[in-house]
Length: 113
Image 1 (tube, one colour):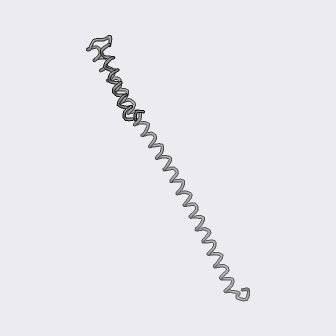
Image 2 (spheres, helix red, strand yellow):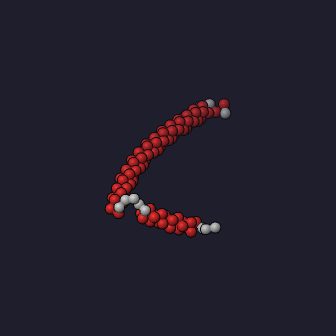
Image 3 (cartoon, helix red, strand yellow):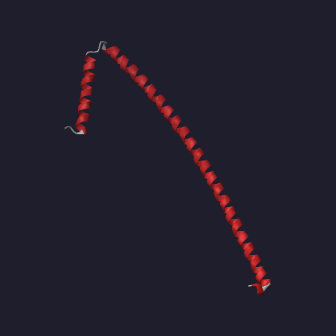
């Protein structure tokens, strides 16, 4: 059984042999074949450039969308933290007030203790 490296080498050799045979038996002249290859190269290059631009646009939009979503999540997190901080501060103040009231009651009327 051939290893994957050998399989790849056989694949490349087969590709070169096939391309050579195709060029030898091509129904067009050398100049026509070169023009055809040049045309295909240009078409392929243009398509590749178009896809690269499309990919860049997609990535840019995806980055902007992700940035907006993360920013919104961070803002909501900050709001929740601020709200909980206010609630905790209110609870502490209420506790202090209740403590001070009970302390004042005990100081003014020590017999109840």
